[in-house]
Figure 1 (cartoon, chains in turn red, orange):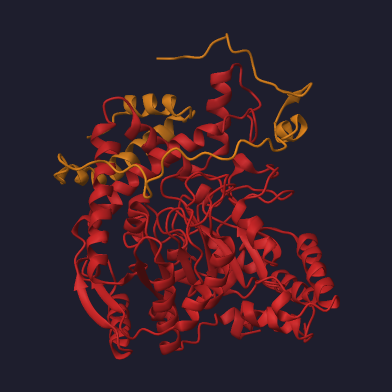
Figure 2: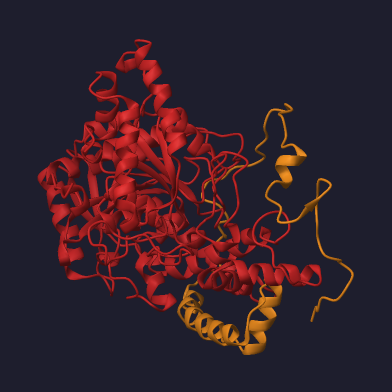
Amino acid sequence: MSKVDVQNLTASEVRAGIAAGEFSAVEVADAALARIDALDAGVHAFNQVTPDLAIAAAEKIDALVRGRAGEADLPPLAGVPAAFKDNMNLIGTHTTCSSRILESYVSPYDCTAVARLISAGVLPLGKLNMDEFAFGSSGETSAWGGAKNPWDLERVPGGSSAGSAAAVAAGMATVTLGSDTGGSIRQPGSLTGTVALKPTYGRVSRYGCVAFASSLDQIGPFSRTVEDNATVLQAICGKDQLDATSADRVPEDFVAAARNADAAGLRVAIVRDLLDMEGVTAEVRDSVLAAAKRFEAMGATVGEVDLPTSQHGLSAYYIVGPAEASSNLARFDGIRYGHRSEDARDTIELYMKSRAEGFGPEAKRRIMLGTYALSAGYYDAYYGQAQKARTLIATEFTDAFKDYDVLLTPTSPQVAWRFGEKSDPLTMYLSDIYTIPINLAGNCAINVPCGFGEGGMPIGLQIIGDYFAESTVFRAAAALERDLALDMRSPLVRGS
Amino acid sequence: MSLSEHDVRHVAMLARLALTDSEVEAMRDDLNCILGHIDEIQQLDLASVAPMAHAIAVTNVTRDDVIVPPFSQDVAIANAPQAENGAFVIPAITAGGEDE
């Protein structure tokens, strides 16, 4: 076995070990690639592995160390094994979105968040499996077959950032990037026992991430610890000229906020009406209430709020999301890139057949739903109504944050379920009821593990913050992480 | 609101998706099930609420007017399923095509 125990090291431990000469970055890369070789046939987190990129990045770090760079001189994520959801472009790699329509697409440019993470010193291990075009909550809509949950390979890892969650939970990557349109980072984070952040809309540039719903999409990190998550956000956040909606903010020290980890004086609220909704399991509900008790014990004040309009979030989301997706996916025409039908006689037929052959069933469903919601005569009743509901949901959050610093809900109403268990689309959609309102309002939220449920599967707490309140969210999440001190190593990590 | 088979075929044409007959039927059932749930949004009294298009208000975002190297023609067409003489190839645009 490799001398680097990569699956048990945090990002800062990897960097410190390289700086101290305990191991080289190339040895870290070799250890991570060896784990992928050994485990990924069973987990299927990766769509593509990029050993050449990982080794080349590692050699650069080792050259810095040989040039007598001390720990302070190394980039913030030097030598840290990382991987990216397969909807993020990286020059020379395939970017398939786990869809046949992009099967042979090769990225001619870099996604800003990916480029920034690579500049911060990570070792790029490859591209990660996902629900097709991020349409799904289990990973199962991937055209290449779904990723599996490292806690139980018979169960789904959640979605849509299925591989991003599974790679971290299996100890194949230390940090990964996912994208979150309605819960696609936080929900798989919950189902795999990983720390997973959806930053505030605009915090991270969306440039180079294949668009699903442009007013909701946001890139964010997966990690095993809150501090690693903060380190990644620090590296990828900030204004980007290539994304006009990226926010220009005064720099903040997220890592310091995560290290602070002190909940004393924090004003915390349980979202009572969402917690009492139908469909949430008793073990998840109890686990969230127990976490609130821990906050109280740590010196936080704990109250309760209701967010009645957020209960309508699912409906608003399944109008806004598909409407914007149907428009964004209109670019797949079989002409400029992507799959092209062989037997089209004219241009209209080329569009219709290329798209029919290239998109899977859930992508077609979302495109149809969105096209219908935007079609003549229905726009006001659906898209217009949903946009107004967004205003109410955002106002509810803003009002709640006048009295509280963070709000608590479950991340997912239940622990990870078995493959094929949710076969009709609506049942699958309902698994995102807790995460969707935050995308509609645009504020930030994190998943942090808070216990275990049926079958020993992880339960996740969603800690919701105000716009650009990531520092507060990291502080609360880190305090709970330290207080609970759960052993979040999946069986695939313990067994090795 | 409930979709008929004719509605589904019309929307599929708008969406430029060639659906088989069995796909049309399954799609009608799925969409009606989903719409049956999301129609509850009509219950909200939103008459006096302003619509929200975006989470963060931004206006007139411009960048510095500096020329940066663009994609070369080769890079731009590298992913084209069919290209010729540096151009994308498409079928004839004047023949056929049904538009209801």
